[in-house]
Amino acid sequence: MPVDGKWSLTERGGFLRLHALPAADLWRARNTLTQRSIGPRSAVTAVLETSGMKPGDAAGLALFNRPYAWIGVERTDNGFNLTKLDDANSETSRVGLAATRVWLRAQCDFMK
Image (cartoon, rainbow, N blue to C red):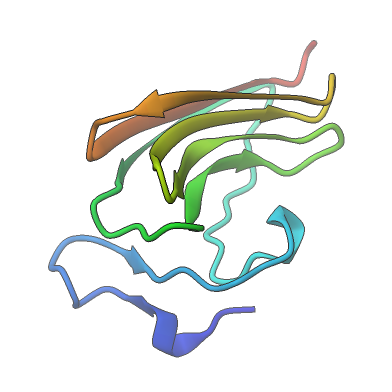
């Protein structure tokens, strides 16, 4: 469910600004922008600017299904990580990130 005071189309013209809110996990995250994937194959690409993220913030792309997957940026006290979570094999991978702008892509193939 959206929290009206935590998103904006006018704070920065031409951009959607989503402000972070606390959540126990991905499934309970608020102000989540969603779009159903179109089959049999589809891809989505998003640009994420990390400069406004604070320690504890995470943002990215998720494929809500079972098993689910997530790729995005996490900000820790030590900096930024590009993170990939794959529920199918219970793997999480992290690599340090110095960029302030990241292009993320999720590709779906529902035939496999």
